[in-house]
Length: 128
Image (cartoon, rainbow, N blue to C red; front, side, top):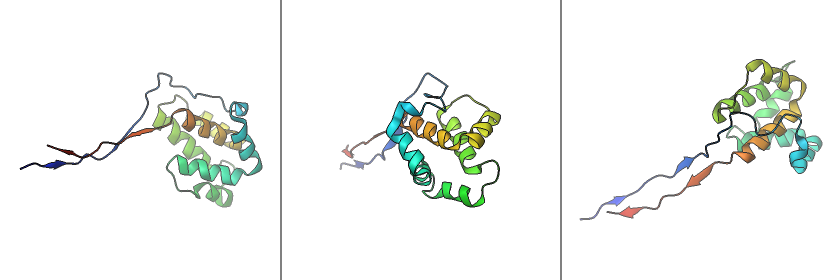
């Protein structure tokens, strides 16, 4: 009697040697279309970037409603991204960038995700 073995697809992350951001906060010209989108429609851009990172689509909109001096959603997303990708940094630097350069921080995070895309490997069912 043969058995059917089914393996679920597992995400495979590319390993990067660098523990630094692949671009600086103000490197918007490295991806000009993305920068223009963020400039002309920042709420839409932040929502789309949040969704691509695996967070709820409308999460950044809460920042516009409930955010204070320090934008909590931007800060939390930046810290989460640093931890997920193993990027060196400090909460103090994240706080300063998130507070004074919010659109640029979202652009940097979008560029980072683009440069560290996750490849999903599909495994077919096999008879054994």
